[in-house]
Image (tube, rainbow, N blue to C red):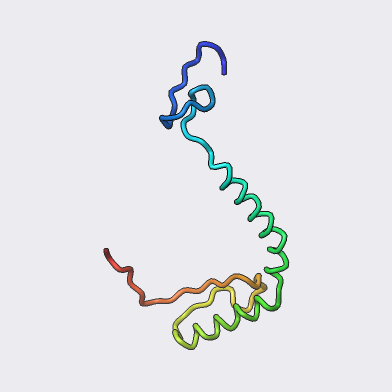
Length: 97
């Protein structure tokens, strides 16, 4: 930062970064998230291409279609990852609070 420049903090509190930033990062949570992301990345490709997951997805979609015949399953018949389903149903109203 050039000398003579005055910055106003966007978040008040703390004195981090030469009093230009308030708050402290949750280092334990950041490290935990990084470890979880590494585990997921190691298994993501295998999971997405797994015939076991595709079979579970297909069963879910078949049973949903039996319960709700007007259900639209998006992408059915297309090449899809095994762990993902996308569907829509008509006639549901959003509940007002």
